[in-house]
Length: 186
Picture 1 (cartoon, rainbow, N blue to C red):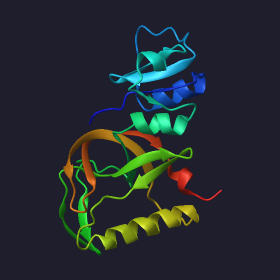
Picture 2 (picture 1 turned 90 degrees about the horizontal axis):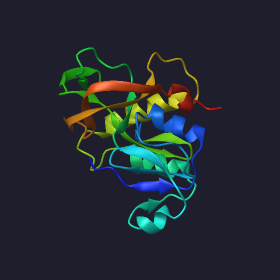
Picture 3 (picture 1 turned 90 degrees about the vertical axis):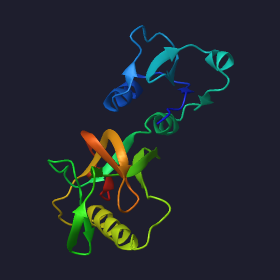
C-alpha cells in the first residue's frame, strides 16, 4: 500500500516514541536537530522550517499528531481476539464454524482523537450484519467492563486478501500493542 508523504510542525521525543512503537524507521542520517518531522519513503526524518516550500505536494499536518500518525500508519489493523497459531481465522455463521480464512481477520483502523478506531468494511455483503452485531457487542462489553477473555490488539502484517465478511486478512502477524483498555469506559 502506498504511504502518504507528509510532515508535522513539531519534533518531540514523545512523538518519535509513538513512531518507533509503530515500527516506523528513523532515517539513519537523522541528527534530530530539525524542528519538525517529515515522513517519506518509509521512514521519518527531522526537518527544518521551510520544508513546506521545498516539498509543497506533501501534506502539512500542522501540529496534529493524530493526522500525522493516521497518514503514515496505513498498514496497521485492529484484531479482536488472540491470533490463531496457524494464522487462519475461523469463519463463523451464528454458532457454526463453516470454514477458515486464508489468514487472520482484522479491521482497518484510523488513529483519531488520540484513539485507534475501527473502520468497518464496505460494501457490506449479505449476511454480514451478524458479524457487525457481534463486533458491536464485543466492543460494548469492553466499554462497560464485562469480563471477556478476548483482547483487542493493534497489529501489522502482510495483507493476503479479503475475508468472507469483506475484512482484510493478513499473515505474518505482529502484535504492536494491547489496546483492550482503550475500549473500556473511563
